[in-house]
Image (cartoon, rainbow, N blue to C red; front, side):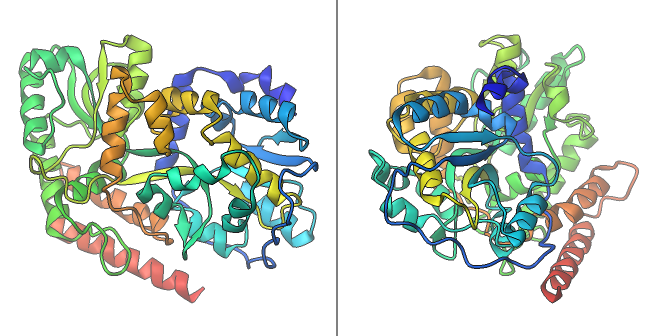
Length: 445
């Protein structure tokens, strides 16, 4: 199957690939729909097996992580041959049905978005923990991989003290801007605070010939959640839900409403509009600036980190998510699959490290930053972003993500609509009640 990948659309533009990787962050995760299957496969004693490794890889990841080169290099060096396939249809349903029938043909998959999908996939018996396979691996420098994962990312990739994914890259929310309108507004560096973004947007508006001052990439994550993280030390409440009713949330919604009332924030626009170059600033998945650089030139746009309520006080940091390679339950060759993952993202595979840095953005390993980010002015924003992630609060591994988005998005739209009364406390209270009701129903099922 590898030859088919090398001659089709899988090596499309880097910008398109980055967009697909980033946009996965806004997809809700479905609740479990079937019972978990039998206990996970036990690790075999030998590492570096000679059996084939059947690997299922998402098309955008195949390019963003330099999988073609990795598979070719692995197959030339090791006895086990990686055979690549592409997902189609409802992946989780197909895998679970195959596991129940005892005829699963794949060993692992790239990528699962964590931590949002982790609990569902574990409870449905789709994936198994990696710890025993990692410990047993004889791949050169395999022992350097997991200890080199940024600690908060490693915590986010774990569930019940077990590691469920080998992360490839990490996404988070950051501010991107087009340099020309921001420089005309007097900003040669990133506006760091809510007040500075407001000031920059006002100045863009005053001097603009049609440029939209500010937008966000997607509802809930890139507007409300990101600003909640920036304004409180405790963004998650005692029920494992983002604290949409707290003071930080109401202040954030009030800030967005003010921006809308003064025609500084067009909440009807999104990521696709940013790619056209007509928006001065966007709070977005933090590849937005680099993607506009690819379209308009390196000097035309910049990528920064998140915006914060107070200067020099990052509070809970930034909401982040990770793209993880996972091992299927009942895999025929679990040892070979994990060995490949460890080699693919390990310190010896320079091609993948460089590709993730330049295309997917924000690798998860300290050795990748040391080699491909340190001293590189164009990539310095990635070091700044990962330093913030290293001190950030991660999303809990639970099943609230899709449920929250189902109710928070409409509540925000109600608050943003100038034709409706502005009642943020009531809107968020109603959304929270609906979230709790759905979570209670989920527990009953």
